Image 1 (tube, rainbow, N blue to C red):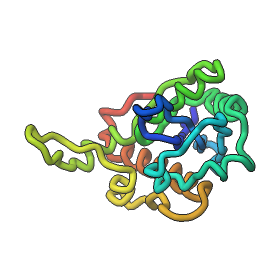
Image 2: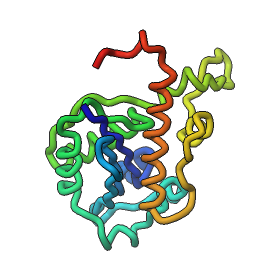
Image 3: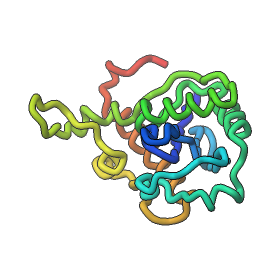
Image 4: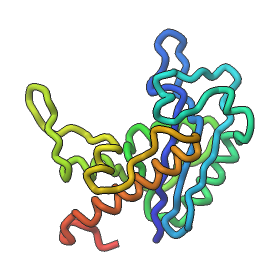
Length: 192
């Protein structure tokens, strides 16, 4: 069964406490591992949406970019649902964040949530074993860039068009996930 890798970019990292504006999914990219190329979609935001400038370095999107070529959320969700059909699981780098945003988007259009989520960041955490620099210690969750560099996978682009950035991100997520799976002892892997 194929695996579907996905990533989203949002208008804010957290809900804006001053205005109550929730993060909105601005773009989605997914890649089913039985397909040759990823799929990139800009998502048309509601008219009142703003973009926190702190998010720009991650996705390179502005409100002006969202007018041409952006699709209605329901169209992107329907495409993702079709892609997820028959997938063993959905993999994102930071599953907690990405699934929360995907749930919010799908809830806005009334769509059911697909299949099982796998977090490549959590798979990479014990392999990279980056120390958490605070009392009590522990392991730090790696960034996608840190995990990509560790596994010698091309890291996500920090420059270029939003589509180039998104495609490089999903390629890095897939590379990190596949590297993690190779690192897991066979006795720990499920027999699927």
